[in-house]
Image (cartoon, rainbow, N blue to C red; front, side, top):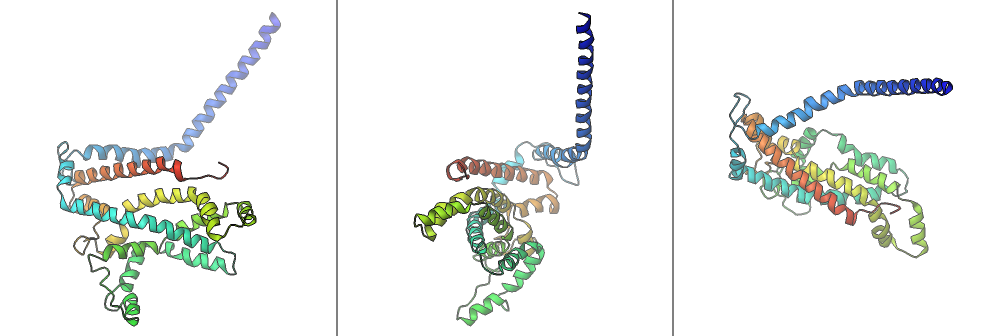
Length: 312
């Protein structure tokens, strides 16, 4: 009995020591993570919570404002420029996102070919992503100039009268989509990584069965690339609805011609920092948040039907 008590005491001491060491390691971990946690709270969670309240007020930077309930949201529904900005943003997203996926996958498949000097071609296609959006806007304003731009000059050489690209309400958004497609090198790199992850065993088995290039592409490459396509689809939709820098620089924040390049985030920015209607801008931000969340949930829900993972 005495021996059992003597053995129990050291065991209890060992357990206590382990518990103290575990608590000490947890405290150390929290201390190391505290700068990030504090930043997350101060710069993300707190503004998020405050913006919800501001969306129900008439708050501006110059005055505290008053609680007005749903008035900001009701006013948005009757704001013609708000509706125009939604229309422009949806137009851009509907055309840009599918085109960026198709061109991205196509370029990645070309750049995945085993030919001499391929690393140089990959670098050339990736370079546009390193150019700042402001520089891209200035470059394309010169290229698309209706009077002396290189694109209209080339069209004149083959007998085609080029339009006033950025000065035409009809051609302004297609021009912006074309400019944005010029900088898809980052997604191409991701597609290349996805192509490199596909095992050659699938292609060897398909060759033995006599499958041609189209059959290998649509029955092996595309299905096994769908996880990467899924990722770029989600990021592309989010990025398309947050389009700001390029159209803002092209139009000096005016959205011309005829507000055809006034996008949702541009109008949100103008309300918040040009007209100082911070409550109104907060309401717009929460509408955008809800729309993006709904679209993201729908994409995730649909992914079960068309995204295929290797080994499943």
